[in-house]
Length: 280
Image 1 (spheres, rainbow, N blue to C red):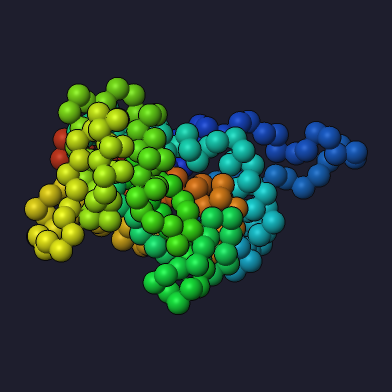
Image 2: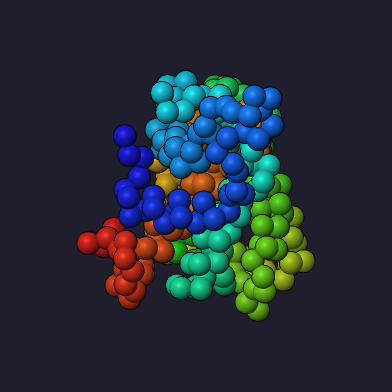
């Protein structure tokens, strides 16, 4: 079962494969000089895409081509090598080079999702009868391109998470001189304004009690990004417990969102071999 269309899967895999170190087909340390062939990285990569998209368990997605243990071990191996984070950064650099990141308009917002399995960053959700939940403080730029996120328990307020969220800007290189940050009304405090002033950022904070059209400001970009994340069922109901694994799946989802937006915006201006017949 395909988790994503081929016009999106193929460029993802081509770049992902470049980041992987070369490994022999057979284990050279085996005492008999032979062993079962190493499961193809492409097979495991496709399994991870299916896990991200459909949210099923490792045992449910495993079959004769790849076991659940192999998926977990290869996933952890790639996390240690930093493959997922590098893949996301390459996608951002490619988007910036071809289309251009609108770095002068940044939106920040938090969202709460379920975490039935608990985990290292889960907490009691105030909007789900005290069940375990996950707070995601995300940041998007320009046309809803996700830059990063901070994970915390669902009982954490958005405001204290603003500083570590804005720290994700440090890896983007030089920023424009005039950068406007668009937080929602939950960030409306003197502490937030002081933080933005210290970082030489302009804040356009929504006012509590004032209803405005959602497209009246740049906040509508970040408002739909959590919906795109929740389209990946692995993130909508997070059963992963280690923080590193959750970040890896988020990095993979952010890469998919960025590459999909890149293909959509470049479809009318560029030509390439695997270009879709219709604009996605």
